[in-house]
Amino acid sequence: MSIKTTLFAGLLALLPGFASAHIVIEDAYARVSSAMAQSGAVFMTIYNHNDFAEVLTGASSDVAVRVELHTHLQDSAGVMRMVEIEGGIPMAADETVLLQRGGLHVMLLGLTRTLAHGDSFSLTLEFQNSDPITIEVPVDLERGADHGAAGGQMDHGNHGAGHHHGG
Ligand SMILES: [Cu+2]
Image 1 (cartoon, rainbow, N blue to C red):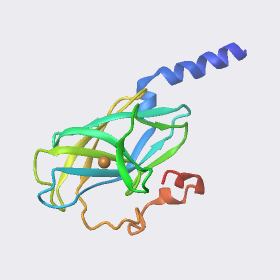
Image 2: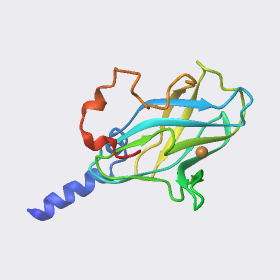
Image 3: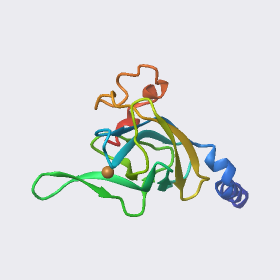
């Protein structure tokens, strides 16, 4: 009987369709520092509703020559610097990961066109175990650094204090 239970759980974890339906991306937006900027950053909330760990392994978009996964780290001089995350962004089972200003973000390098406030573009996110997810990202230059606070329409913010450990 325990063998059957284990087998069933194993099969569920192997079904790609089952897996991809359980990653939810919300509240994505992009920023550039100016109209002349050569790079930009994308922020979002990622919910891993799977009961297994996932890894955001990479991303791609036709608005950038290269797309990297970055975080901010403080160097020995106390200066915050952006660094590429080797191996991707891990997400524990049922974890919510915040990509936000001053922390994790998707970096757009070598912009192929100008990103102006109100524009939008497609971004494809790739995962270790789940199918890729393509989202439409609005360019929002007016969003404050206080992520999500201005929206007021995000039910997910009430799911529990455990969601806010990513920053
Ligand atoms: Cu960056």
